[in-house]
Image (cartoon, rainbow over all chains, first blue to last red; front, side):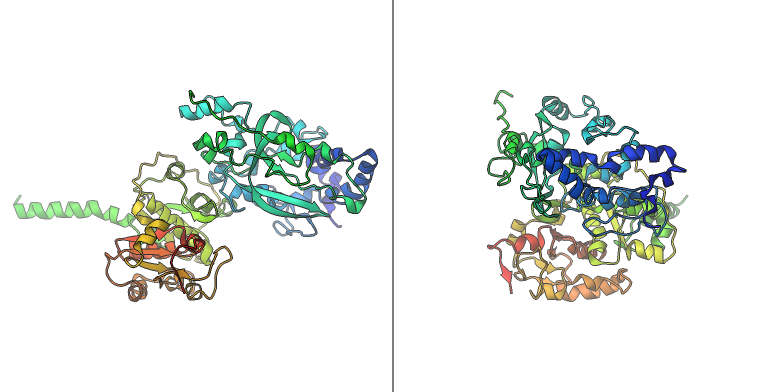
Length: 305
Length: 294
């Protein structure tokens, strides 16, 4: 039988609860991806997208039980193969997670994408030390977007504000609470950015961008480029009538956290030099007009402070 | 008791006190047999990826991935973390200045093998008195049918208070000032030294003007273990000279491979003034103003 675990009911004979939850999970439905990009399209285009792109592309490798626990799904036609012969592997995050999340998140976490290893990796932590089984398999609710999931890991689950040993850290956290995400200050630096997605092809380069979060305009955070360009779906006849409804940058939880970065060491990095902040000059050319809303100019710190 | 007898007793006592300490001071390149016999006396630091460590490691060893010790700074690879970061890393690993550390990486290829030597040099730079590497790496340990464990060890954190050995490090300005005075040892294969080949990330082929070639391959046996002290000494002397007080600066492409010879020259052969040029060819060859040849 080819890809036996495509039929969740088969695994559900023993793993009833997991299979039932998983069927509704974002990992399985990938509906979050669809619901996001569809906002760029007219109703007619959305219908075409569902038929010609979503079912054939996004849904094609998302994600049977075996896609995580036995064999890597083919991504852009390439599969990394079996994890451990034909055996089911319960948890081996360098494979069970990284075979799919190995383009951006995982190599950023280990530092192998030309950067610095995340402090949590330094201390031996792996994906499931923060991301719970419920988050991966679903909790039985049919969420439409990732942001609807309440039980996602937060830095403050472990790092409780107000308990910092150093006064400078405590003051820094207090001052920026609600106006800057943890990543904005603690991301170690450049992370993978993908550009110019034409017909399934995009080019990747390192980059570091800070700007207003498109989902929370009160907060600045690290941004990652969404490589969808105006003609990304042109081969499928989708013009993206509402292309400018969405930005080309999303707030991104970068997995290269360090205690000290150039921004935690020196206030001027942001408040004077504005290093890494999205500007008119660095904005993607011919990109969505709504990107302009993400440009943030931090104010200099008054001398009295 | 006569004075003579007393002297003998004091001498014996001193020997007894010194002996256990001496057993801890390993040479910089240790064998699997030595490590197995001394496992209880050393801290084994596994610098492979976390998942590789979890899959099987030397019993009792701790894990801190290489990428934490050798970081990217701007365009330069394999650079030192800042001193405060380095202290944090050592503290959370529970390493103290007096800890005898044996660093273990993979051993099959030069880039992976030198993960261990670069970390050992970094420990020495940070003030750890004794740091060694396991010859042949984890593959040799496995090939020799030594035991493996899957029990991850969580180190007990201790504040690190070592005194940094800044004299083990040279920057570009220092190397410029040392040209014509110190021995510049280019620790790359001869074709790279001669300028016939270069790595993609190095701007230009060639070497620092006046450098001598001290290839890393001279240190290794066919099974990737280290040669003995006498053989290493015989290889080094004709190239860097026999004067143990002469200043030697080792470099390579990124500052990683050259740490093999730093350990050999400084910690094995007793050359007293050996530095690593951290920026190495990546930095030197990218600067139009630095003297180069051919």
